[in-house]
Length: 166
Image (cartoon, rainbow, N blue to C red; front, side, top):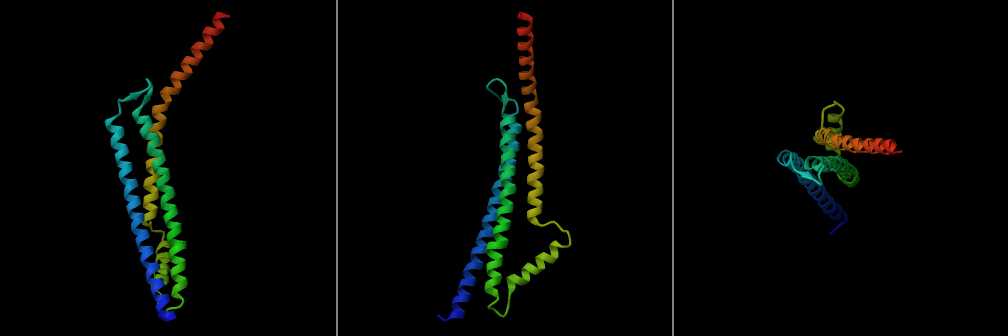
Protein backbone atom coordinates (compact mmCIF):
# COMPACT_ATOMS: atom_id res chain seq x y z
CA UNK A 1 0.00 0.00 0.00
CA UNK A 2 1.53 3.30 -1.02
CA UNK A 3 1.35 6.57 0.94
CA UNK A 4 -1.64 8.01 -0.99
CA UNK A 5 -3.68 4.85 -0.43
CA UNK A 6 -2.88 4.95 3.29
CA UNK A 7 -3.99 8.57 3.52
CA UNK A 8 -7.21 7.73 1.67
CA UNK A 9 -7.90 4.78 4.01
CA UNK A 10 -7.28 6.94 7.08
CA UNK A 11 -9.59 9.56 5.62
CA UNK A 12 -12.33 6.97 5.03
CA UNK A 13 -11.91 5.59 8.53
CA UNK A 14 -12.03 9.02 10.15
CA UNK A 15 -15.02 10.02 8.02
CA UNK A 16 -16.87 6.89 9.14
CA UNK A 17 -16.00 7.64 12.78
CA UNK A 18 -17.45 11.13 12.35
CA UNK A 19 -20.68 9.68 10.94
CA UNK A 20 -20.89 7.17 13.81
CA UNK A 21 -20.29 9.97 16.30
CA UNK A 22 -23.05 12.07 14.77
CA UNK A 23 -25.41 9.07 14.89
CA UNK A 24 -24.53 8.61 18.56
CA UNK A 25 -25.31 12.30 19.07
CA UNK A 26 -28.81 11.80 17.65
CA UNK A 27 -29.37 8.74 19.86
CA UNK A 28 -28.25 10.74 22.90
CA UNK A 29 -30.59 13.60 22.04
CA UNK A 30 -33.44 11.15 21.59
CA UNK A 31 -32.68 9.82 25.09
CA UNK A 32 -32.87 13.32 26.58
CA UNK A 33 -36.10 14.13 24.74
CA UNK A 34 -37.72 10.88 25.89
CA UNK A 35 -36.50 11.52 29.45
CA UNK A 36 -37.97 15.01 29.29
CA UNK A 37 -41.39 13.69 28.24
CA UNK A 38 -41.31 10.83 30.76
CA UNK A 39 -40.56 13.24 33.62
CA UNK A 40 -43.48 15.46 32.60
CA UNK A 41 -45.82 12.45 32.51
CA UNK A 42 -44.45 11.26 35.86
CA UNK A 43 -45.20 14.70 37.32
CA UNK A 44 -48.73 14.58 35.93
CA UNK A 45 -49.54 11.08 37.18
CA UNK A 46 -47.86 11.39 40.59
CA UNK A 47 -48.91 14.95 41.38
CA UNK A 48 -50.66 14.03 44.61
CA UNK A 49 -48.02 11.63 45.96
CA UNK A 50 -46.31 12.99 49.09
CA UNK A 51 -43.11 11.69 50.70
CA UNK A 52 -41.98 12.33 54.28
CA UNK A 53 -45.17 14.27 55.04
CA UNK A 54 -44.23 17.35 52.97
CA UNK A 55 -42.12 16.54 49.90
CA UNK A 56 -44.20 15.89 46.81
CA UNK A 57 -43.30 13.67 43.88
CA UNK A 58 -43.72 16.74 41.69
CA UNK A 59 -40.96 18.50 43.63
CA UNK A 60 -38.60 15.54 43.16
CA UNK A 61 -39.42 15.12 39.47
CA UNK A 62 -39.00 18.84 38.81
CA UNK A 63 -35.52 18.74 40.40
CA UNK A 64 -34.68 15.71 38.23
CA UNK A 65 -36.06 17.57 35.20
CA UNK A 66 -33.80 20.55 35.87
CA UNK A 67 -30.80 18.23 36.09
CA UNK A 68 -31.75 16.40 32.87
CA UNK A 69 -32.16 19.70 30.99
CA UNK A 70 -28.80 20.96 32.25
CA UNK A 71 -27.13 17.71 31.21
CA UNK A 72 -28.85 17.90 27.83
CA UNK A 73 -27.52 21.43 27.25
CA UNK A 74 -23.98 20.39 28.21
CA UNK A 75 -24.20 17.30 26.02
CA UNK A 76 -25.29 19.31 22.96
CA UNK A 77 -22.34 21.65 23.51
CA UNK A 78 -19.88 18.80 24.03
CA UNK A 79 -20.96 17.00 20.87
CA UNK A 80 -20.84 20.23 18.84
CA UNK A 81 -17.32 20.99 20.03
CA UNK A 82 -16.10 17.46 19.39
CA UNK A 83 -17.66 17.32 15.95
CA UNK A 84 -16.22 20.69 14.97
CA UNK A 85 -12.75 20.29 16.42
CA UNK A 86 -12.00 16.61 16.61
CA UNK A 87 -13.52 15.50 13.37
CA UNK A 88 -13.95 18.48 11.07
CA UNK A 89 -10.49 19.92 11.64
CA UNK A 90 -8.76 16.57 11.26
CA UNK A 91 -10.68 15.73 8.10
CA UNK A 92 -9.89 19.14 6.65
CA UNK A 93 -6.22 18.61 7.45
CA UNK A 94 -6.24 15.23 5.68
CA UNK A 95 -8.16 16.77 2.76
CA UNK A 96 -5.27 19.15 2.11
CA UNK A 97 -3.57 16.17 0.49
CA UNK A 98 -6.52 15.56 -1.92
CA UNK A 99 -7.57 17.35 -5.08
CA UNK A 100 -11.21 17.44 -3.86
CA UNK A 101 -12.13 18.63 -0.34
CA UNK A 102 -15.78 17.68 0.41
CA UNK A 103 -15.74 18.30 4.18
CA UNK A 104 -13.98 21.63 3.79
CA UNK A 105 -16.60 22.73 1.26
CA UNK A 106 -19.38 21.43 3.49
CA UNK A 107 -18.01 23.42 6.42
CA UNK A 108 -17.89 26.59 4.29
CA UNK A 109 -21.51 26.03 3.31
CA UNK A 110 -22.57 25.53 6.91
CA UNK A 111 -20.72 28.66 8.00
CA UNK A 112 -22.46 30.68 5.27
CA UNK A 113 -25.79 29.21 6.36
CA UNK A 114 -25.12 30.10 10.01
CA UNK A 115 -24.20 33.66 9.07
CA UNK A 116 -27.74 34.14 7.77
CA UNK A 117 -28.95 33.90 11.41
CA UNK A 118 -30.95 30.74 10.81
CA UNK A 119 -31.36 28.32 13.69
CA UNK A 120 -29.43 25.10 13.46
CA UNK A 121 -30.72 21.82 14.88
CA UNK A 122 -28.42 22.13 17.90
CA UNK A 123 -29.80 25.62 18.58
CA UNK A 124 -33.32 24.20 18.67
CA UNK A 125 -32.18 21.46 21.06
CA UNK A 126 -30.65 24.06 23.36
CA UNK A 127 -33.82 26.16 23.29
CA UNK A 128 -35.91 23.12 24.23
CA UNK A 129 -33.47 22.32 27.05
CA UNK A 130 -33.63 25.89 28.38
CA UNK A 131 -37.42 26.10 28.15
CA UNK A 132 -37.67 22.70 29.85
CA UNK A 133 -35.32 23.79 32.62
CA UNK A 134 -37.35 26.98 33.13
CA UNK A 135 -40.57 24.96 33.26
CA UNK A 136 -39.14 22.50 35.77
CA UNK A 137 -37.65 25.37 37.80
CA UNK A 138 -41.04 27.11 37.96
CA UNK A 139 -42.69 23.89 39.13
CA UNK A 140 -39.89 23.33 41.64
CA UNK A 141 -40.31 26.84 43.10
CA UNK A 142 -44.10 26.47 43.27
CA UNK A 143 -43.70 23.15 45.10
CA UNK A 144 -40.95 24.23 47.50
CA UNK A 145 -42.48 27.59 48.48
CA UNK A 146 -45.16 26.01 50.74
CA UNK A 147 -42.44 23.93 52.42
CA UNK A 148 -40.42 27.03 53.24
CA UNK A 149 -43.57 28.80 54.39
CA UNK A 150 -44.40 25.91 56.72
CA UNK A 151 -40.84 25.81 58.11
CA UNK A 152 -40.87 29.59 58.56
CA UNK A 153 -44.23 29.32 60.35
CA UNK A 154 -42.84 26.70 62.74
CA UNK A 155 -39.74 28.81 63.42
CA UNK A 156 -41.89 31.86 64.04
CA UNK A 157 -44.18 29.85 66.34
CA UNK A 158 -41.21 28.50 68.32
CA UNK A 159 -39.70 31.97 68.58
CA UNK A 160 -42.96 33.39 69.91
CA UNK A 161 -43.41 30.57 72.41
CA UNK A 162 -39.81 30.97 73.64
CA UNK A 163 -40.22 34.75 74.01
CA UNK A 164 -43.59 34.28 75.72
CA UNK A 165 -42.12 31.69 78.11
CA UNK A 166 -39.30 33.95 79.22
